[in-house]
Image 1: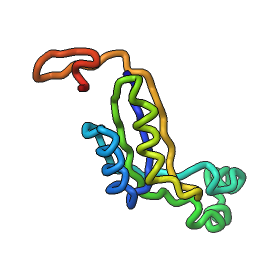
Image 2 (image 1 turned 120 degrees about the vertical axis):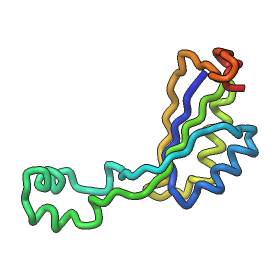
Image 3 (image 1 turned 90 degrees about the vertical axis):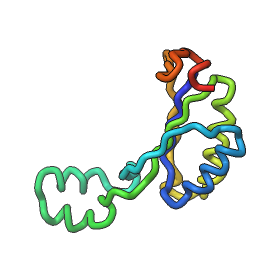
Length: 124
């Protein structure tokens, strides 16, 4: 089993949900988040802000802002990971910074609380 964690633009959630549904994935978590990519600010300016220089904070302006995002978490069988990743990429890829990130992690086990089923049986 794998956990697929995707950070996407908030305005792309409806298209992403539809793409996941079309890929046969109906169970996932979605939560609000704020964040920013590493390329949006000069590291030297960030150092100046951390050191308390007001000029650096003024230069930083909007570039230091955290942007609203959605974080999706999907746990699937290993053979469905590629389908899930492609389903997330399809509606979110614009070619511009901020399209998002996808992380794939191994899942050691899962247990369905209601029935006590474990392993892949708990997620299907």
